[in-house]
Length: 70
Image (cartoon, rainbow, N blue to C red; front, side, top):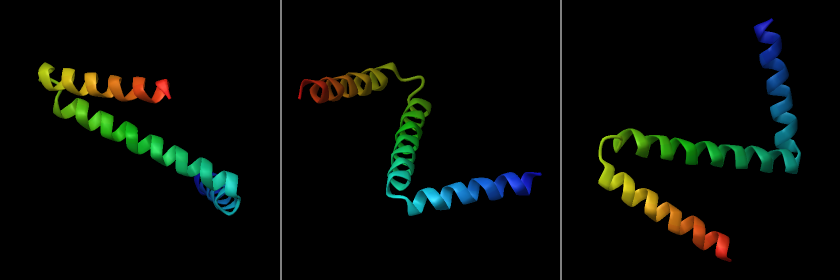
């Protein structure tokens, strides 16, 4: 049962990689995963330090606002 499910996932993944739209979707999903991992690491490292957390939050807010302003 588990092997069958893994084989189905593998087949869908390989078909998606050969399809340009599928490959691009996988790249965006991977990028989102990396960004989430970085945010989680920052949160874990600075969980008790409010000064650094505030600085990171302020900087990210400025970056997001500047992207939205374009």
